[in-house]
Length: 263
Image 1 (cartoon, rainbow, N blue to C red):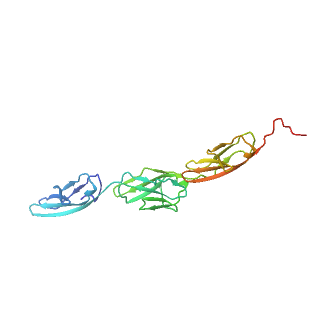
Image 2 (image 1 turned 90 degrees about the vertical axis):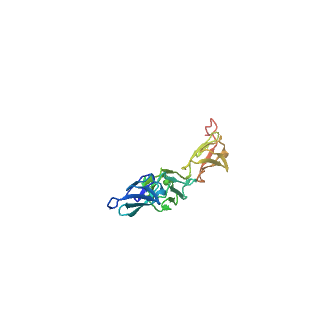
Image 3 (image 1 turned 180 degrees about the vertical axis):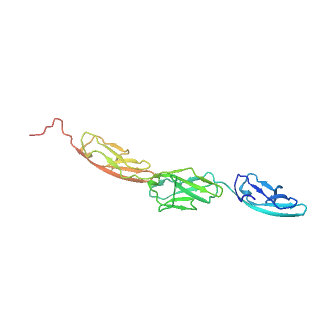
């Protein structure tokens, strides 16, 4: 009697009993090596190379007869240090992405969770390599989440530390703020913002030339020639995308001091 399956690091006990008169003597063998001369055998701390056949021999010294029986033991390493790994490249909206569940020993089953809830296959989520790989066909910004994998084998189960997936996206069309009219001799202030992860950089254009590389742009002292379209470009250096929007400024000549008009 004894277990057929055990976890590495554990101890197991085998017992052997045979009907005999007078009572039998016993020997236990593993890989043809004598490991015990008692009816009960307690193994040392198990390793995977201790898997195999354990043979008990019962002897009757009076009858001169012996009889044998054996039991098979499989020693399995427990699952430890489960890790969710991602490619070095960042996740970008509109592109595919993989997460991989890495285990120290092969797992019989792997399950995925998103924000602590079971994650199942759908039109955008596919599992490969016996569930070891989670494939997102087209990443969306709403895939930002905490991902974990649980691995199970015959002797243990373990869950990875959470992996936080950050999806890079944008920039969306910028919002541009600024005056539609301004007087000569004054300055105009424009501002630009755009939804983007990571935050984007900005540049302002006027008459085909870059006039600022910040989200806010303050013009020089205005002249009539500075009427026209002021364009803001938002740039996401991770997604490689950019988006533009513009506003039009009309510069009006400032009235002289004391001007009262003609009656």
